[in-house]
Image 1 (cartoon, rainbow, N blue to C red):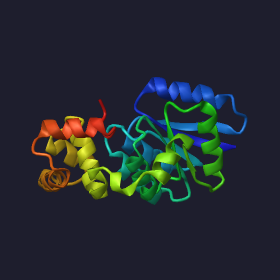
Image 2: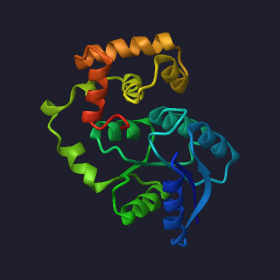
Image 3: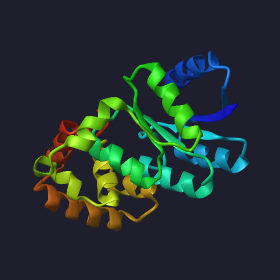
Image 4: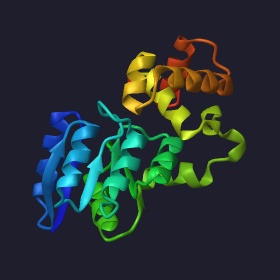
Length: 209
């Protein structure tokens, strides 16, 4: 039996996933979480074989949550189930420690295959994302590929309309540090103001509408 921790801030999404997983004899929903801190608390309690998480939840940012979950419970693999299909985000999630990445518009069979493969120690990337990741031309790489993981997270959070202090709370750093990251990432992207930053993030599928 694969005991799964569901982490998504939308109760309807969690309900749908529970219904899907309940039809599988070898899968069990052992816990739920709607924000990052709840994920870490539940992992500390044990009894979880796999974490199935969204990248956009209140509290701890997606990439940081993957890293912290991996540190908190290194024996529990992570499968990301996200609305974002941008190859850079997928790559960063995998580098942060995720073992699988599936988009929310995928066929349920793909998600089930990902869960089972990752639970056995494998890795899984949504087939719809593989071509873009493997065959994407380096010369066409978007400017945000040059951002550090922290700058990338700041870009995502700022694009959601969060103030510097709020971003700092999510990332557990000071507003001054966030401001420094913001300045650097805007320089790298050739962006001069907040409106352009939001448009850039949404255009590349990095922000949450």
